[in-house]
Length: 448
Image: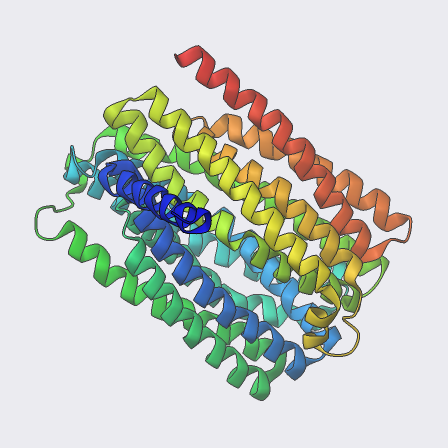
């Protein structure tokens, strides 16, 4: 037989064998199915939202686009406080109880949603009370107070969606998550563009809420299908531990996210005060492109939490748990490195899509490097969450936040602008990944 033909036959057999192994493995098929739907949904929705970003940048111009992106960052900082970490909470506990105790899973979903609505309404009030102060003293533009108040609409529906998205993830319903996210992204893009042309920054903020309103409605439909008529919520029958999960998992999960966004928000507002909204716009465009680098690793890490949780509390197979973790780290870091390298090489033509004034590749190239370390840290963080150690995760994120702020203030003060902020984030993620992984190894060693 010809050597080349023989090699092709061997390669095909190996591929078929690998496919067969994945198909015959319950965990492997779950990961493969979840990865397919999550990746396809995220690719399409991220592409749509990236198009939206380009359109809005052209409609508003660099300075107003920088102000718009800063307002969105501020609103999502409040959102992480309002959501009480219900996304991660519902993912973990619904994946843990969906087979063994569906009523308990439903109770946790309802309690989590009620808490997030209560915190959401309280946070909207907080925005109303502080919007003038934030716009004047932090953003250096009093006119943005009204934009912050309009953003409260966006915040409320984001809060509702957090519990819904976590619930569907807990059921590993990645197909409908992908479908729903794509639909809402298209609605959001159209509504942002139309509203921005009519009412500028305020219109773009209100338009952003349009996609989340649609997402909330269609997510609710599919959640009802999962629970069906087999469950009903009665407050007097809710157990103490079904409420305590808010403190044990939800609160620290929320604080983890708050710390991350607070550090990013404070560093960006410092960048505004030391430079201009134009400089923030340059950083934000680079940061949005960085999300393209991270969308595959972030998608894979999303499916990791429910699977790791079900393995830990279901089969309790330590070898399977370690293999899932190891392969996800290798795959995520490898994919991130390859995509980051490609986007770094193509930095100049990519940035030209946003128009004049965005042609500075250094922040983008550095953030692509930071994405490699961030993808590693994200997988390790999900593993820590699957162990239920969210307060330890909070401490890890606290250290990361201190690192980001310290390096950001240092580099921005030295006049590095957007490039300095990107560099601060890369260094912080590098250190963050090291101590997180050391802690996870300690956990796994002492539970075996």
